[in-house]
Image (cartoon, rainbow, N blue to C red; front, side, top):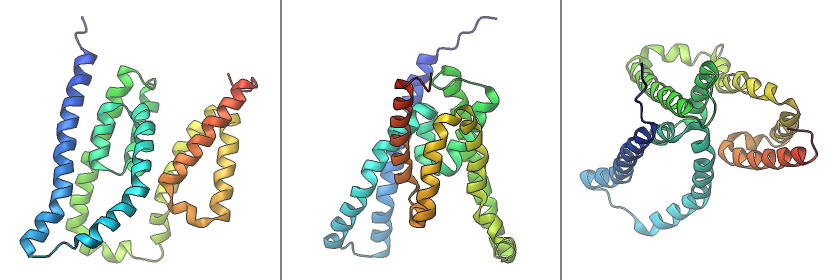
Length: 224
């Protein structure tokens, strides 16, 4: 059976749809506060708004640019459009895409991988919305269980446990490269616990360090 799938046309449609949806999402996100303020009669204090916005932009604009440069090669265009709209990339979308890639044995950057990561991120987004919907309905009866001090530590460590299991697969592929960045970040987080909450910033830092270390090891013939 002849395969008539046109990947270039698929990517073109993905970019068109993604740009339209991102534009709609951006308008809704920026417009919602002003619409609520208009409906409730609240007054926007512009003298306080612009300085506060500037402080946020200084932190998040560089982070957004770097995350874009990191995530797009890892996930592909379709998955990134979905992930940038729905959020929770580091906690949900990235692990889901990596796990799907491992199961399918697809190569990063290939047409097959781009489709697989898009499907995995889309599935993750739908499941997330379904779980949130069910959680909203069941939050009152489940509150005593979720707030139980006996099981609360388990919920606090779900994300570290998930990333530990996923990370081990990638560390095992190149232990020589993984040892130094892993040791460095572990020591930094132990010595400076406040860095644990700075995930996006530390991802940029350790990404740059890992690239530099890999280049040096490659030049010395340690890595092929």
